[in-house]
Image 1 (tube, rainbow, N blue to C red):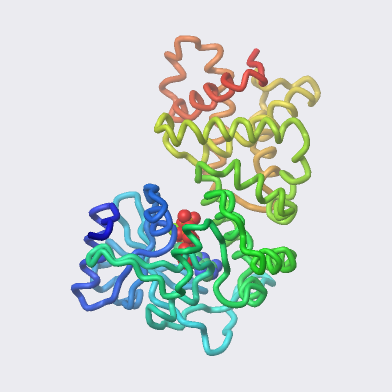
Image 2 (tube, rainbow, N blue to C red):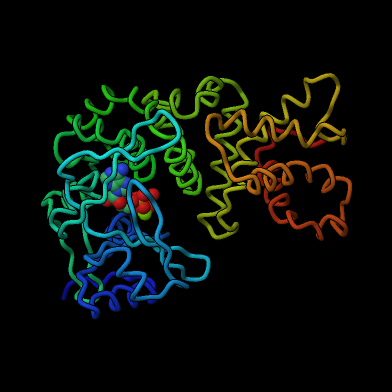
Length: 373
Ligand code: ATP
Ligand code: MG
């Protein structure tokens, strides 16, 4: 009897509905990787023979939104959760550029194909394994995905140099897998990755920022940042973090991140991107506030909000986060003073960012290095 992998019932329902409507459909990507490794998937990606329009027609416009230019896909909304449903792709016959306002050159990737062709359009062998939860069937079209997953190898499908050139974001995606699972990169893939690394500068910031958000939300983010530094990728991706890497602030940042990640893994904290941003920025805020013309973090002054925001934007340059997220992170840092002054937390507890601020303070206390006055 083959193992039955446990996936969220609503995801099985979506797959079943598509299959009943006559569309071949699978669970793909990170969720399959996690299931096979015995981990609980955090989010779900599906791949189907239905076009985005057919998906929208099947589930209705209140449930499904079509997004993307370069890569059109359907977003299925289940409460706050988004399930990405992409249509099987094949290698495009010719490269058609997407018209974008900037100078960056991006090509359409919307040539629909069958499930076999789709597997070979994916980046790494371990990312090209399909799972049909209805039939309880694993399909590894590339033939090497399962063994690579077992041995912990990140291997590009096809010619690595060609495929990194075609889409340099795959460089970051490979390194993220190393950080997340402790895998190694196959020799040929690693050689091409190092050689093609400067091409990352040609990628649109929006795509890289999206990958950054996903990276930071993972509880492996401290390990991934270390891998990005070791491969010198950080100098392209987060140049200010790279530049400060050997300074005490950065080392403090990694320590704080590690503590935060352990607490999320143990179910003590919710996974929140704004807390990660606050945690990462805190050591820099702390040291700069201590230095600048007598303005202390712990003594409110009119510029403080602007200063903290500036430090955050600077640290994550050239990426931009949604305004609301930055605002949340700034508030969590600023509230540290109120938490200290209001020892019973009576007033502070009413603040909408109280929970984040409290979590940040707990982590700060745990390190013992950053002394709260
Ligand atoms: P995560 O856990 O970060 O979501 P993931 O592998 O699921 O990891 P996604 O960005 O959700 O990453 O992409 C889903 C799948 O789509 C990948 O597993 C891969 O098969 C394919 N994919 C994503 N980006 C690319 C790319 N740039 N080139 C080729 N295939 C890609
Ligand atoms: Mg995914």
